[in-house]
Amino acid sequence: MLSFAFMRHAYIAGTMIAVISGIIGVYVIGRNMSFLSHMLSEIGFSGASFGIFMSWPPLNGMLLFTIVSSVLIGQMSSKSSRREASISAISSLFLGSGILFLSLANKNASDATSILFGSMIGISQSEVDQILWLSIAVLVIIFIVYRDLRFDSFDHVGAQVKGVNTQAISIIFLVILALSVSVAAQIVGSLLIFVLLTLPASSAKHFTRTVSGMMVFSIGAALLGVWLGLYLGYVTNWPVSFFIAMIECVIYFGALTWNRIKNG
Amino acid sequence: MSEPVLNIKNLTVSFPDHLVLNDLSAQLNQGDFLSVVGQNGVGKTTLVRVILHELTPQHGKIEYRPVFKRMKIGYVPQFRNIDEEYPLSIRDFIGLNLHDSHMPWLSKKERQKLDKIIEQTNLESIQNTPLGEASGGEKQKAYLAQALINNPDLLILDESTASLDNVRKFELLDLVKEFNEQQGVTVLFITHDIELAQKYAHDYLLMRHGSYLSGPISEFKESDLEEAEHA
Image (cartoon, rainbow over the protein chains, first blue to last red):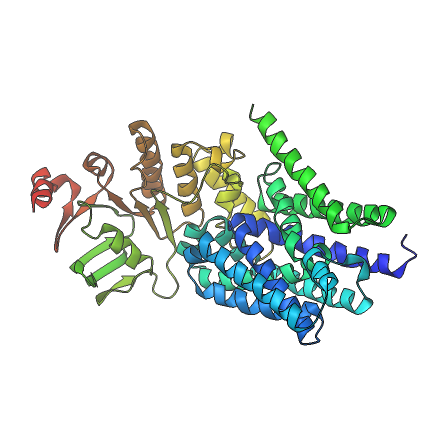
């Protein structure tokens, strides 16, 4: 299987995506921002469609839209950025815009499908390189702000009193979330971002009680899903994102069941 | 004489529709235990927000000691955004406030600090319990431990005991008293509970709408409070 270049590309890109999704997912859970990551994925769809319309690589359009919108969201108060009604409205607007850009670009349904559900098997060497550099950028930023981001994500009140610049941390987090959403969309597509960005971390919180423990579990669960999903996609010729979604859901519902049994 | 830790000078804060703090002055010295009492709406929380740099006064100022660096403040509120799904253990929650190193993992020195504060606040046996599953009293102890882990210059208890039963209130304040007496931590205790203030504080600041009374807690007169309530 690994003698094929496309599978090697898929495994390298998938591994990086699983690692950053596993880490960012823990902060998404800590900051209670699952819904917001969903909105960013829909903004990403619109950005990718815009990229196609402009004859750019879809990832570049996605990065442009998600980063600009994350900075704008960061200017809103944390309370209003979590307001579900406004998030739903903005999501709808961007989904609609995405369809418009695809239509203006005269692209067919297969382009929309590959943005919405991912196209892991078709990743080129240059796309692998881009994913690799973006992932390294995300990891470096997280390393630099690790303590403040951890404090603000899991105890906003404490972080404010400590003097952490929570507004700056919020914007930095949204930018790295935007980068992660754009990168992860390459494998699972923008509609299934949830699968890698929130399910592994949501499962992790039932098994471990520390931020670092949650990250290790979450990365492990994401890697298992991506690696096994790619293998099953290769042998069955079914969509990889289907298998990844199935595996992550099994882990998640397994974690819920385990939690229920443990608590009697 | 003890060093001043906080010098509140002629503080005035008003919101568009009303005046909250009117020319308030007070001083806290190293090792003081000051109880701030008064009915709702007299500006107790506003005072805390000014001290925490969350609000800027229209007039007056607060001088902090030491002046050459940002003052270390520990803050224990009545409520925090911790629901029963909160994933971190009590130990990990307390450790969030450690910033001696920039590495993602805790240094040896930080682990020692964490062990020490957990022992001092009697949380050893439940340190691995998820904070979300802890009782109200255990949560407040965890908040207190997190606030104290960096040896703050000032500890603010903002109605921290309001949602606890009597046993847990005394347990928490006994701990605070220990830190105050043995380690010289300066305490600002915002409360409605006069009995607690009289039992633990050295001094009081009675806030009324636009006027203030202060002095040693032994000289506190219930009639002043009643007068304030009927004002």
